[in-house]
Length: 203
Image (cartoon, rainbow, N blue to C red):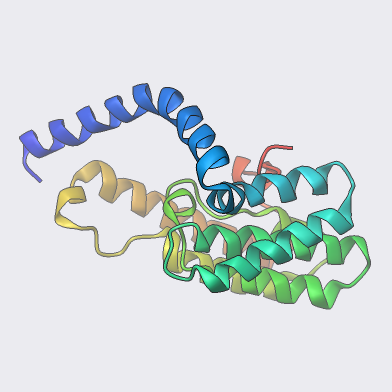
């Protein structure tokens, strides 16, 4: 990557940070009024997490199942990876609440089998279900989950536009984190990292 390309990329990032707070509410309003099906599709993760954290587990599960059903219909869209990840995370947490550890373990693996998304690739996978299972001594399934999420979270072959030391170092840092987390999970230790304490989507 040339210095000019690096400058352009940073300029785009700055522009995006400035415009996003303005454009996002406008987009949400447009979708709500003119494309309600799309509005619901893009907001189901928030609805499901809010229901879960309010203790309304049947509603959280219903939203999650709807999210996963829509993912089957919209397989090639960018939000599909979010649906697979969040939907299964919440269904796994609801299963834990009901005492069904085997179902929770199955859901964790399904959440890890997401193809990723712009959000997951940037901010990383959710660890809330993995954390709760690790607390119960379920080490093997958590290690397997970490192997799965590494497939989308760590970019081994950066495209030319991102072939810069900063991005290369970032990918190396994520790979090192995953190695550390797997080592800790094998010992039954819940990693002391913000990624593991974050509750998921805001309640």
